[in-house]
Image 1 (cartoon, rainbow, N blue to C red):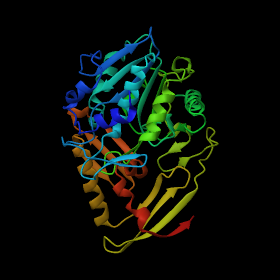
Image 2: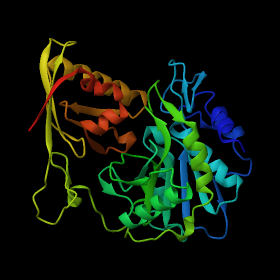
Image 3: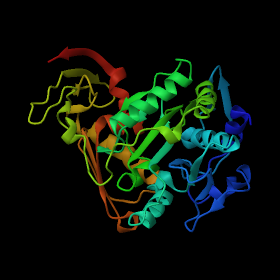
Image 4: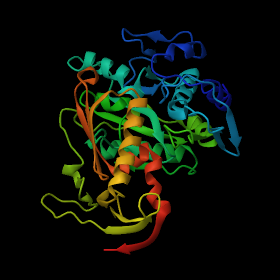
Length: 378
């Protein structure tokens, strides 16, 4: 199986939720379909690891993709999204299946519209977990060096598990990888299982600028990662976390307004190193604006933007959420914190995001970094 050719074939067009079946012919014919429409296959005798990726693309547009290849990067001509999120993960799993690596492999539907497929499966097994599964590993993270330990501010895997997996990835790559524990995960299919199975994580697969027409894939990293995944002792990774015990980033030294304290102890005052960044907003009233960040976590602590800029940002965020068919009931945005309430059809839940996290999803909101004219440390 050729990794590059497989990735290119999976990204020749977009697959909005509801059209995932259009790519089933590109997948192994021995995959089974569960009652929710997800595809899966089990390899080995009672494996303890579930591997996941998702089949849908973060767009509502069904369109052909024109590939542009520049050195190690695959991107598009700029008219469409690429779909590396998450065809990169799909490619890795297909390679592992081809090489008979033990595991329960799940290809989920509707991740980009609220993790529908994985949420349905998790709901089924919340009271009666699959007896052998202890680990859920998603291949659906940007960059090339993250093993996610927290998703949506809640611990998803133990530090011990993350360190062991990072060590495996790095050593089996002959030292060319630099994976490490990363507590800044946002939301993907493995998060649905963190209250069911002990160790759940998400691994970087080499894509960047997901959810935009600037999305690109580091194909050399993907090729090397796929080979490394054949060498890892997935079944031997340590199990430590209790899935019934909740641990949020707030109780681990993280607060939305406070930052990350690397030497955190209970009741110890959080140590935040602040940086206030001033800039002239020439696009909107030449307003003198500033954004204050925690230099360690890059979380936004305080924002001062003109009213027109905040309204414009709200419009971009609303369009982004609606394009993903998330069906929000209410969107509140003050430039620092995004609060979204969803309709009953989407579960009726709400979510809160710091500006840093929103900028990761919508890179256009990072415009202020280019506008910066002077920085003042506080």
